[in-house]
Amino acid sequence: KEKKEKKEKKEKKEKKADVPAPAADGQSDVSKLDIRVGLIISAEPHPSADKLYVEKVDLGEETPRTVVSGLVDFMPASALTNRRAVLLCNLKPRAMLGIESQAMVLAASNEEHTVVELLVPPDACAIGERIFFDGHPGEPLAPNVIQKKKVWEAVQPKLSTDGECVASYDGLPFLTAHGPCKVASIALGKIK
Image (cartoon, rainbow, N blue to C red):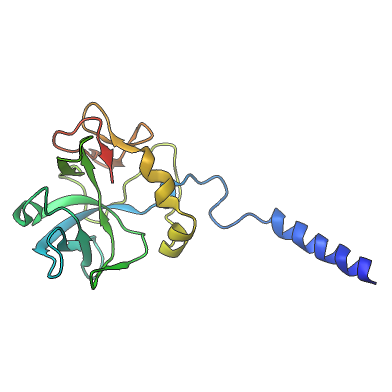
């Protein structure tokens, strides 16, 4: 009887192994991220941190999202206000010194990390438009799955700007319906 039970348990385990996990059927990590065009409506100093801004960002949703970013040392709040940007939208929200950040502004930096510039989409892009990468179709995953599977950690080292200041993932440009996203002047920079 024990042998029969062990055999049945083994068969159940084998059956479970045959079933692919949702969205794991060949979908690349970068296509699991929800990277979108946003409009930074306002940027204010964080009340409890000298190096952080608290931004309100329109992502084409019912209400703007609150985003906390460490850009104080690199640009004044006035340079962020009413500015289009590229944001990672399906990270799990997290409190940053008491304020919940609901997305991440993407920016490139030079090698010394002394200059930082926002990724900027083409002017004609719609607010909320999803960024895509040729050859990487797929729908974004839920924030808890992104965190659990460490998708951002796998993708981020492959993000950079090319020699023409175009934002790219593993050599493929961040694309919109109106062209690629760029930075003003940082060529061959890292994107975070």
